[in-house]
Length: 230
Image: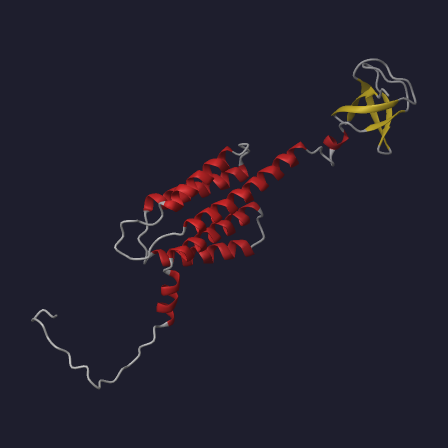
């Protein structure tokens, strides 16, 4: 059927010529799979988040940028819902903020919800293109892995906050030593802590030489201590 009407093509004994697709066409055909493009996008997000969480690793950042570029390249052939894309980007922002701000998991919960809803909305369901749909298994697996990773990161961060400092002046708090001279709250004396001799005052009653002491505070290189009761 042509603009001039119906025409009959004589196809008997014609030569069949096969035209192979170019490398660009083959790559674009491969990337046009919505599941693959979604996975590439999330790999890119993961790579950038790893790079932000561990600056200087370089490799995750490179993988992340390449994956994002390939994902956006494939999006040119897919019916993208920009509302879904906006929700995914917002979820990523919340994940990054969770790394920088202690919210006790609220930012991560919001990021997971935003990522899940945005992923389900990412492609237009009313598109005339057949087969353009995102597998629910891919979405749930990806969101689940992302949630597990950030729950692990948050847990590690909270445990690190509860750890006692091991170095510096703060590391002396709670350490025990021995009084070398008589101590009182208004009369400094000498104590030995970690093999070092420090000036110290008591937080209450006087302490006699040879008494085991525990460090309560450090101010201007002077310790405030109390006697260790057994």
